[in-house]
Image (tube, rainbow, N blue to C red):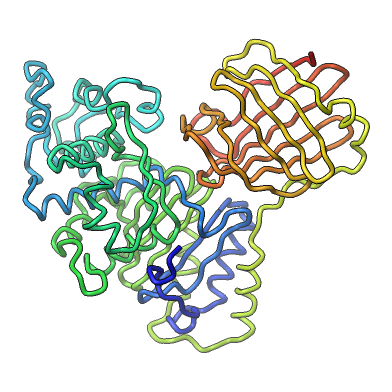
Length: 488
């Protein structure tokens, strides 16, 4: 990353933060088994603490999932300021190609404001995993869904509403979201290498699909904290920022943790303690704390984000003072040591594996017919690394696994149904392979640009192979059914 485009760095105490508070946050997250992958704390515009759990690193971009929504909202704010749309514009007017005779009174009344506030009138909303299964127009799918309530009647979290916002911005600008936002937002903030998933019609996704680095998450939080100003340039209208992060619709009856019930703005969640945030599935988080002049950016492989927010309120919040904190060398040393040793090590190696490795080496095992399209797997065991090759309906997928250590590489292998239906063409992966005992070989795959960590246990018995496959987080199943294979 270009260092000139980074946020400035500082010691925690210089920004009025006790190092011990940050250490307490990290240690408690570890004690509670919360799987965080990266963490960045910004105060008074300076990065006061940052850490990545190895094998994750600062340069790795990240699937943001629904955290994408605050970027889509920002695009709407930019287009609004340029007079390309208004919040009261009716959604149907942007899509005359669809049959208006099928638009009832509710659909005809649906406006951009309703999309922004998740009050689009659908009781069964379209979400990211649902959209990813569809091969036809997502816009058409949304417009054909029935509205069960009048727009603005109630809050129903709805990824389809966010995608419609993205479709409208791309319609009125004639550009993709990336193209439109590059000179107006990404460029000025120094956000580089923007990747954004597209729908079957080529539209960049509004509700998910953006892939950025942790520091980029912190930057958008800092921009909103500064009321749209960045290095003396007004990127967003202060009025837009104020409205976007203010209460627009109540969420008090929403199930879940306390911070899910504080209300909603324009694609931003409101939180306790005067804060607001963007949320993404499986642990992607941007918390803005205006009263403390602070931003917390987190990525992870964790579904229990209510507990992560509680740790922010219990540890980081009280550790922020109104003046520089007293310098405590011991506290700073403890924090530095903790940040330097954050890691998820691979499974411990079992030494007595030589005979089974010799018998399985070079063998190709063919699987019985299964719903996942997996056809075969082969193994090549070497002293420093093992090469595992899978075949499925997409073709051949080769992975090099470090023996008792992670080796970073790329793969096209993805267990789509275990990965929130995500399947990027090529994915960065840190892979390790270790023998659990004399007959079971464990493959650990940490997909570095995603929350997902897959564990595959290959159990050998003669010519037979049993493959168990599970994942750390998912909105659906966490494991596949056991697969049976036999060597050729």
